[in-house]
Length: 373
Ligand SMILES: [Fe+2]
Ligand SMILES: [Fe+2]
Image (cartoon, rainbow, N blue to C red; front, side):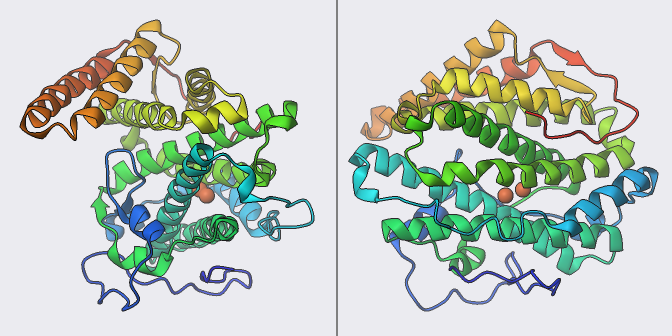
């Protein structure tokens, strides 16, 4: 089992402090998988830091009743014990064809990095905070993400690889987001994480012959954790309504477009994995966007129209541009010129996505939703 902070007895965690104040990286050289997780690219999961003092000032008083009910759910910890490999776990990595094996490993490492990114951010917010409500929440969320990351690292052992999480905390680059951007981005990432995992789970439940790895059996309870994390972030935004009005509506649009576009392009880079599951990445993407958008009605006053044919056309164009950029990388000077042109076109297409007509949404009286998909 990978060593991660233990939260089982409600003890405090001791994750190293992220950010430039960190000490030297460990002397042991990181392995190849760790170095891959450390890379920062447009599509790879990032580590985030923020103004923790400002974040700590958010009050949740206007949503107190819903908040307390949610914290009670976190405390009940239904998934304690879920993230362990049991008798149902049976897997021989040699059964996977090489291309599928490579893509699946890439998926695991990327998922682990995303899980651990959440863990580091929430643990840091807990460590630096004084706001009792938020500290309690962040403690539980870091607990869950640590379990998720640890479980994936366990799965990687079958492939004889692992990611050195201690090294990542120290060596990976941190992206600074203001607290409100952290809320928009992490809310969307938790909810889209739920939508992705539940869509895969339901699909493989109906097509068990396509379940090429046992980890997918764990996705249902797993995504309920992510759903709950999203609920918490939604409540934080609903309790501070200025985050949802005025110019912030534009930012909310921007983050929806950015998250959907990133997922669309990233998933298309794993054709073997989707083929093995019997999923068409485009259809799968649209289904996930539909679920995510439906959930976002609990908090966002403006929603990207994910059913618009133009939305899909522009996503397809982004995908072609991304493939073009990838292909041009090895093309020397001419390749660099081509890359610049394609990047400029990408900015333009992103702009077009942002300018598409949106749906305005009247927020419901109460925020909480059930993971009913
Ligand atoms: Fe997670
Ligand atoms: Fe999460």
